[in-house]
Image (cartoon, rainbow, N blue to C red):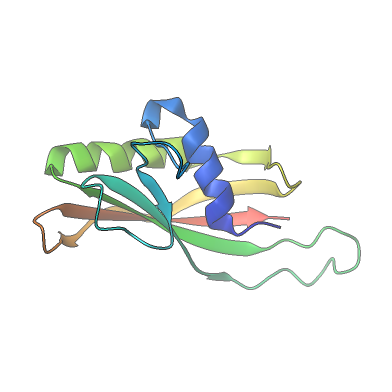
Length: 138
C-alpha cells in the first residue's frame, strides 16, 4: 500500500484542469510530496498527516480499513490565483469514492475535513493556503 500522499498525487495529476506536474524529468514540475522546495514560485505540496486508528473489527478478512489524512499546501505569488487553485483541489478531491489505485488500494471515500484556509506569507512574499482531507481506504 502506497503512502496516501503518493495516491493523492496521482489523483491530482490525473485531473488535467489543475495543471499539476509531478514528474522530476519534466520542466515545469509544480507538485511535490513532503518537502516544499524554494522553487518554483508557485507550487503544491502534499503532506501525510496524522489520521485515525485502523479498524479492528474485520481483522483477518482482508477488509481492514485505514483512516489516514493528508494536508495540501498551495503556494502562489498571487492571493487570488492561490485561492482559486486550492478551491479547485477541494472540488477535485472532496467526495471521491470507490476508486482503486494502481497498487490495488481502494479509496472508499476522501473528504475535506478543514479548509481551505490562509496559512501565511513566506519569506519571499508568496501566499500559502492549506486544506486537509480525511481518507478511508483498504
